[in-house]
Length: 96
Image (cartoon, rainbow, N blue to C red):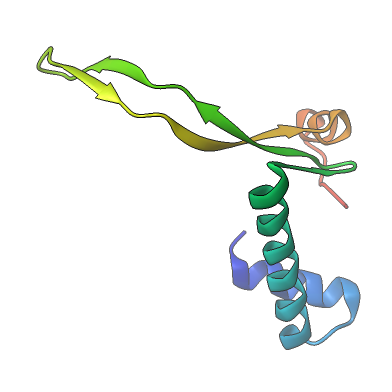
């Protein structure tokens, strides 16, 4: 599903115009981003948990056999809720 399809589906479910739905989704994404930046974690019940994790510095080998130092970085991880994992595993259509 792409952004346009998401807006269309959410507009149908909520009865809001496509413009209002897009504003709502943009606001949701902005709030989620702010929560991850400020708190480093975000949990949405019945969906899952997002967490910013620190990846440590490490040494990697290139295809030529040369050792390269990979600097530490931040990475976003997602852990689905048990309910979401179960619904996906059963192949059911997901309704939130």
